[in-house]
Length: 324
Image (cartoon, rainbow, N blue to C red; front, side, top):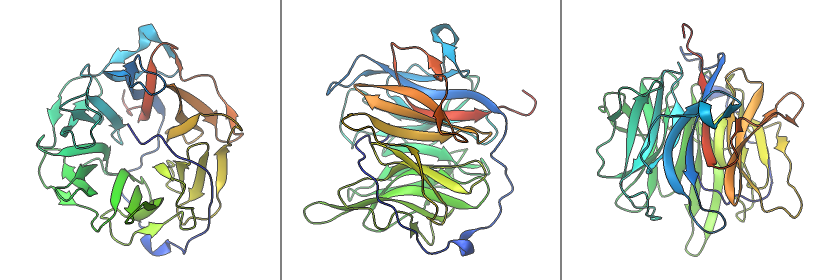
Protein backbone atom coordinates (compact mmCIF):
# COMPACT_ATOMS: atom_id res chain seq x y z
CA UNK A 1 0.00 0.00 0.00
CA UNK A 2 1.23 3.49 -0.75
CA UNK A 3 2.41 5.89 1.98
CA UNK A 4 -0.62 7.52 3.58
CA UNK A 5 0.74 10.61 5.40
CA UNK A 6 0.55 13.41 2.80
CA UNK A 7 -0.10 17.01 3.79
CA UNK A 8 -0.83 20.48 2.29
CA UNK A 9 -0.63 22.10 -1.14
CA UNK A 10 1.99 24.25 -2.83
CA UNK A 11 2.46 24.23 -6.62
CA UNK A 12 4.65 25.94 -9.22
CA UNK A 13 5.24 25.57 -12.94
CA UNK A 14 8.37 23.90 -14.26
CA UNK A 15 10.21 24.17 -17.55
CA UNK A 16 8.65 22.59 -20.62
CA UNK A 17 8.92 18.86 -21.20
CA UNK A 18 8.32 19.15 -24.92
CA UNK A 19 11.54 17.34 -25.71
CA UNK A 20 10.24 14.34 -23.74
CA UNK A 21 7.06 13.85 -25.73
CA UNK A 22 7.14 10.94 -28.14
CA UNK A 23 4.15 8.80 -29.10
CA UNK A 24 4.02 5.15 -28.17
CA UNK A 25 2.24 2.37 -30.01
CA UNK A 26 -0.17 1.28 -27.30
CA UNK A 27 -3.29 3.25 -26.42
CA UNK A 28 -4.19 2.72 -22.74
CA UNK A 29 -7.65 4.36 -22.80
CA UNK A 30 -10.72 2.26 -23.46
CA UNK A 31 -14.07 1.17 -22.10
CA UNK A 32 -14.40 0.97 -18.33
CA UNK A 33 -14.08 -2.59 -17.08
CA UNK A 34 -13.88 -4.05 -13.59
CA UNK A 35 -11.87 -2.57 -10.73
CA UNK A 36 -9.17 -4.46 -8.86
CA UNK A 37 -8.06 -3.59 -5.33
CA UNK A 38 -6.55 -4.90 -2.11
CA UNK A 39 -8.64 -5.56 0.97
CA UNK A 40 -8.14 -6.05 4.69
CA UNK A 41 -10.33 -6.64 7.72
CA UNK A 42 -10.05 -5.33 11.25
CA UNK A 43 -7.67 -2.54 12.09
CA UNK A 44 -8.52 1.11 12.54
CA UNK A 45 -6.66 3.95 14.21
CA UNK A 46 -3.11 2.83 14.85
CA UNK A 47 -4.00 -0.85 14.43
CA UNK A 48 -3.18 -2.47 11.12
CA UNK A 49 -5.84 -4.59 9.45
CA UNK A 50 -5.22 -8.15 8.28
CA UNK A 51 -4.80 -8.46 4.53
CA UNK A 52 -7.26 -10.64 2.65
CA UNK A 53 -5.73 -10.57 -0.81
CA UNK A 54 -6.47 -8.95 -4.16
CA UNK A 55 -10.10 -8.69 -5.24
CA UNK A 56 -11.85 -7.87 -8.50
CA UNK A 57 -15.38 -6.52 -8.93
CA UNK A 58 -17.62 -4.56 -11.28
CA UNK A 59 -18.29 -0.94 -10.44
CA UNK A 60 -20.93 -0.62 -7.71
CA UNK A 61 -20.57 -4.23 -6.61
CA UNK A 62 -21.94 -5.56 -3.34
CA UNK A 63 -20.20 -8.28 -1.32
CA UNK A 64 -21.67 -11.09 -3.44
CA UNK A 65 -20.12 -9.62 -6.60
CA UNK A 66 -16.59 -9.22 -5.21
CA UNK A 67 -14.41 -12.08 -6.47
CA UNK A 68 -11.06 -13.01 -4.90
CA UNK A 69 -8.25 -12.84 -7.43
CA UNK A 70 -5.79 -13.97 -4.73
CA UNK A 71 -6.22 -14.91 -1.07
CA UNK A 72 -2.70 -14.48 0.31
CA UNK A 73 -2.74 -11.90 3.16
CA UNK A 74 0.61 -10.55 1.95
CA UNK A 75 -0.71 -9.43 -1.44
CA UNK A 76 -0.93 -5.70 -2.19
CA UNK A 77 -0.40 -2.96 -4.81
CA UNK A 78 -2.40 -4.42 -7.73
CA UNK A 79 -2.11 -2.79 -11.14
CA UNK A 80 -3.77 -3.71 -14.43
CA UNK A 81 -2.22 -4.31 -17.86
CA UNK A 82 -3.01 -1.92 -20.72
CA UNK A 83 -5.29 -4.51 -22.37
CA UNK A 84 -7.14 -5.30 -19.13
CA UNK A 85 -6.24 -9.00 -19.21
CA UNK A 86 -3.51 -9.22 -16.54
CA UNK A 87 -2.75 -7.88 -13.07
CA UNK A 88 0.58 -7.45 -11.29
CA UNK A 89 0.96 -7.18 -7.54
CA UNK A 90 3.45 -7.50 -4.69
CA UNK A 91 3.46 -10.45 -2.27
CA UNK A 92 5.16 -10.04 1.11
CA UNK A 93 6.99 -12.99 2.64
CA UNK A 94 5.73 -11.89 6.08
CA UNK A 95 2.37 -10.09 5.94
CA UNK A 96 2.43 -9.53 9.71
CA UNK A 97 5.61 -7.48 9.54
CA UNK A 98 5.62 -3.68 9.45
CA UNK A 99 9.26 -3.62 8.33
CA UNK A 100 10.07 -1.84 5.08
CA UNK A 101 12.83 -4.42 4.59
CA UNK A 102 10.60 -7.51 4.51
CA UNK A 103 11.24 -9.53 1.36
CA UNK A 104 8.49 -9.27 -1.23
CA UNK A 105 8.04 -10.60 -4.75
CA UNK A 106 6.34 -9.19 -7.85
CA UNK A 107 3.70 -11.56 -9.24
CA UNK A 108 1.68 -11.65 -12.45
CA UNK A 109 -1.80 -13.18 -12.75
CA UNK A 110 -4.46 -13.23 -15.45
CA UNK A 111 -7.60 -11.24 -14.67
CA UNK A 112 -9.57 -14.51 -14.65
CA UNK A 113 -7.38 -15.85 -11.82
CA UNK A 114 -5.25 -18.19 -13.94
CA UNK A 115 -1.56 -18.14 -14.77
CA UNK A 116 -0.12 -16.97 -11.44
CA UNK A 117 3.67 -16.69 -11.61
CA UNK A 118 6.48 -14.66 -10.00
CA UNK A 119 8.41 -12.07 -12.00
CA UNK A 120 11.15 -11.39 -9.44
CA UNK A 121 13.32 -13.72 -7.39
CA UNK A 122 11.84 -13.22 -3.92
CA UNK A 123 15.25 -12.38 -2.46
CA UNK A 124 14.66 -8.63 -2.39
CA UNK A 125 12.07 -6.13 -1.24
CA UNK A 126 10.22 -5.56 -4.53
CA UNK A 127 7.03 -3.52 -4.41
CA UNK A 128 4.65 -1.17 -6.26
CA UNK A 129 4.57 -2.86 -9.68
CA UNK A 130 3.02 -1.25 -12.75
CA UNK A 131 2.95 -2.17 -16.43
CA UNK A 132 4.81 -0.32 -19.14
CA UNK A 133 2.66 1.36 -21.78
CA UNK A 134 3.31 -1.44 -24.24
CA UNK A 135 2.43 -4.04 -21.63
CA UNK A 136 5.66 -5.94 -22.27
CA UNK A 137 7.49 -4.94 -19.08
CA UNK A 138 6.68 -4.25 -15.44
CA UNK A 139 8.15 -1.39 -13.44
CA UNK A 140 8.62 -1.86 -9.69
CA UNK A 141 10.60 -0.52 -6.74
CA UNK A 142 13.47 -2.41 -5.11
CA UNK A 143 15.21 -1.77 -1.80
CA UNK A 144 18.95 -2.03 -2.41
CA UNK A 145 21.65 -3.19 0.00
CA UNK A 146 22.67 0.42 0.68
CA UNK A 147 19.16 1.21 1.94
CA UNK A 148 18.12 3.24 -1.13
CA UNK A 149 14.92 2.43 -3.06
CA UNK A 150 15.11 2.64 -6.86
CA UNK A 151 12.87 1.78 -9.79
CA UNK A 152 13.58 -1.29 -11.91
CA UNK A 153 11.78 -3.02 -14.75
CA UNK A 154 11.52 -6.62 -15.89
CA UNK A 155 10.02 -8.48 -18.84
CA UNK A 156 6.88 -10.55 -18.36
CA UNK A 157 8.96 -13.72 -18.46
CA UNK A 158 11.04 -12.50 -15.52
CA UNK A 159 14.11 -11.75 -17.64
CA UNK A 160 15.74 -8.57 -18.84
CA UNK A 161 16.05 -6.84 -15.47
CA UNK A 162 16.87 -3.13 -15.87
CA UNK A 163 17.59 -0.45 -13.29
CA UNK A 164 15.63 2.67 -14.26
CA UNK A 165 16.60 5.24 -11.61
CA UNK A 166 19.78 5.85 -9.65
CA UNK A 167 21.37 8.34 -7.27
CA UNK A 168 20.99 9.05 -3.59
CA UNK A 169 17.22 9.62 -3.47
CA UNK A 170 14.47 7.05 -2.98
CA UNK A 171 11.90 6.55 -5.74
CA UNK A 172 8.41 5.11 -5.32
CA UNK A 173 5.15 4.52 -7.19
CA UNK A 174 6.27 4.30 -10.85
CA UNK A 175 3.54 4.76 -13.46
CA UNK A 176 3.89 4.83 -17.26
CA UNK A 177 1.97 7.12 -19.58
CA UNK A 178 -0.01 5.50 -22.38
CA UNK A 179 0.56 8.26 -24.91
CA UNK A 180 3.55 10.45 -24.12
CA UNK A 181 6.42 7.99 -23.54
CA UNK A 182 6.88 9.25 -19.99
CA UNK A 183 7.23 7.78 -16.51
CA UNK A 184 6.04 9.47 -13.32
CA UNK A 185 7.12 8.60 -9.79
CA UNK A 186 7.75 9.97 -6.30
CA UNK A 187 11.26 10.98 -5.28
CA UNK A 188 12.29 11.42 -1.66
CA UNK A 189 15.61 13.01 -0.77
CA UNK A 190 16.73 12.84 2.84
CA UNK A 191 19.21 15.23 4.44
CA UNK A 192 21.34 14.68 7.54
CA UNK A 193 18.45 15.30 9.94
CA UNK A 194 15.21 15.33 7.96
CA UNK A 195 13.51 14.79 4.61
CA UNK A 196 14.67 17.52 2.23
CA UNK A 197 11.75 16.92 -0.11
CA UNK A 198 9.25 14.29 -1.32
CA UNK A 199 8.04 15.40 -4.75
CA UNK A 200 6.42 14.10 -7.92
CA UNK A 201 8.77 13.69 -10.86
CA UNK A 202 8.37 12.83 -14.52
CA UNK A 203 11.03 11.38 -16.82
CA UNK A 204 11.42 9.49 -20.05
CA UNK A 205 10.25 5.89 -19.84
CA UNK A 206 13.87 4.75 -19.38
CA UNK A 207 14.34 7.08 -16.39
CA UNK A 208 16.43 9.67 -18.21
CA UNK A 209 15.91 13.44 -17.98
CA UNK A 210 13.88 13.52 -14.76
CA UNK A 211 12.01 16.74 -13.96
CA UNK A 212 10.42 17.85 -10.70
CA UNK A 213 6.71 18.71 -11.14
CA UNK A 214 6.45 20.14 -7.61
CA UNK A 215 9.75 22.04 -7.20
CA UNK A 216 8.46 24.63 -4.72
CA UNK A 217 6.56 22.28 -2.48
CA UNK A 218 7.66 22.83 1.11
CA UNK A 219 9.76 20.06 2.64
CA UNK A 220 7.07 19.74 5.32
CA UNK A 221 4.70 18.31 2.73
CA UNK A 222 4.58 15.15 0.61
CA UNK A 223 3.43 14.78 -3.00
CA UNK A 224 2.63 11.13 -3.67
CA UNK A 225 0.71 8.51 -5.67
CA UNK A 226 1.07 10.12 -9.14
CA UNK A 227 -1.13 8.71 -11.93
CA UNK A 228 -1.38 9.66 -15.60
CA UNK A 229 -4.70 10.45 -17.23
CA UNK A 230 -5.61 8.12 -20.11
CA UNK A 231 -4.73 10.76 -22.70
CA UNK A 232 -1.31 11.26 -21.08
CA UNK A 233 -1.83 15.01 -20.67
CA UNK A 234 -2.24 15.28 -16.91
CA UNK A 235 -0.99 13.67 -13.71
CA UNK A 236 -3.12 13.38 -10.59
CA UNK A 237 -1.46 13.01 -7.20
CA UNK A 238 -2.11 13.21 -3.47
CA UNK A 239 -1.11 15.90 -1.02
CA UNK A 240 -2.66 14.07 1.89
CA UNK A 241 -5.62 16.26 2.70
CA UNK A 242 -6.40 16.93 -0.98
CA UNK A 243 -5.96 15.60 -4.52
CA UNK A 244 -4.45 17.68 -7.31
CA UNK A 245 -3.77 17.28 -11.01
CA UNK A 246 -1.28 19.10 -13.25
CA UNK A 247 -0.24 18.99 -16.87
CA UNK A 248 2.79 16.81 -17.58
CA UNK A 249 4.93 19.96 -17.81
CA UNK A 250 3.86 21.00 -14.29
CA UNK A 251 1.53 23.81 -15.34
CA UNK A 252 -2.22 24.36 -14.93
CA UNK A 253 -2.74 22.85 -11.46
CA UNK A 254 -6.30 21.81 -10.69
CA UNK A 255 -7.68 21.06 -7.24
CA UNK A 256 -9.71 17.86 -7.54
CA UNK A 257 -10.55 17.21 -3.88
CA UNK A 258 -10.24 20.19 -1.51
CA UNK A 259 -9.11 19.91 2.11
CA UNK A 260 -11.78 19.53 4.75
CA UNK A 261 -11.04 21.72 7.72
CA UNK A 262 -10.57 19.84 10.95
CA UNK A 263 -10.77 16.45 9.29
CA UNK A 264 -8.15 13.75 9.71
CA UNK A 265 -9.00 12.11 6.39
CA UNK A 266 -6.23 11.33 3.91
CA UNK A 267 -6.96 11.16 0.17
CA UNK A 268 -4.75 8.65 -1.62
CA UNK A 269 -4.38 6.28 -4.58
CA UNK A 270 -6.00 8.35 -7.37
CA UNK A 271 -6.62 6.33 -10.53
CA UNK A 272 -8.37 7.48 -13.69
CA UNK A 273 -11.20 5.59 -15.34
CA UNK A 274 -10.16 4.30 -18.79
CA UNK A 275 -12.70 6.66 -20.40
CA UNK A 276 -11.08 9.58 -18.55
CA UNK A 277 -14.36 10.89 -17.14
CA UNK A 278 -14.00 9.94 -13.50
CA UNK A 279 -11.41 9.25 -10.86
CA UNK A 280 -11.24 6.52 -8.22
CA UNK A 281 -9.41 7.25 -4.98
CA UNK A 282 -9.26 5.99 -1.41
CA UNK A 283 -10.08 7.85 1.76
CA UNK A 284 -8.10 6.76 4.81
CA UNK A 285 -9.76 7.59 8.11
CA UNK A 286 -9.41 4.69 10.51
CA UNK A 287 -10.12 2.24 7.69
CA UNK A 288 -9.69 2.81 3.96
CA UNK A 289 -12.61 3.06 1.54
CA UNK A 290 -13.00 3.67 -2.19
CA UNK A 291 -14.70 6.75 -3.63
CA UNK A 292 -15.25 8.25 -7.07
CA UNK A 293 -15.65 11.75 -8.53
CA UNK A 294 -16.87 13.08 -11.87
CA UNK A 295 -13.87 14.93 -13.36
CA UNK A 296 -16.04 17.17 -15.54
CA UNK A 297 -17.96 18.65 -12.59
CA UNK A 298 -15.76 17.62 -9.66
CA UNK A 299 -18.76 16.13 -7.93
CA UNK A 300 -19.03 12.89 -6.03
CA UNK A 301 -20.46 9.82 -7.78
CA UNK A 302 -22.10 6.75 -6.22
CA UNK A 303 -19.73 4.62 -4.19
CA UNK A 304 -17.61 2.26 -6.32
CA UNK A 305 -18.42 -0.61 -3.94
CA UNK A 306 -21.49 -1.23 -1.81
CA UNK A 307 -19.53 -2.85 1.01
CA UNK A 308 -18.98 -0.99 4.29
CA UNK A 309 -17.36 -3.78 6.32
CA UNK A 310 -14.00 -4.24 4.63
CA UNK A 311 -11.08 -1.86 4.24
CA UNK A 312 -10.40 -1.26 0.54
CA UNK A 313 -7.34 0.46 -0.94
CA UNK A 314 -4.95 0.66 -3.90
CA UNK A 315 -7.60 0.59 -6.66
CA UNK A 316 -6.80 0.02 -10.32
CA UNK A 317 -9.26 0.13 -13.19
CA UNK A 318 -9.15 -2.52 -15.90
CA UNK A 319 -9.78 -1.62 -19.50
CA UNK A 320 -12.60 -3.81 -20.83
CA UNK A 321 -10.99 -6.18 -23.37
CA UNK A 322 -12.03 -5.43 -26.93
CA UNK A 323 -13.57 -8.87 -27.41
CA UNK A 324 -14.54 -9.54 -23.82
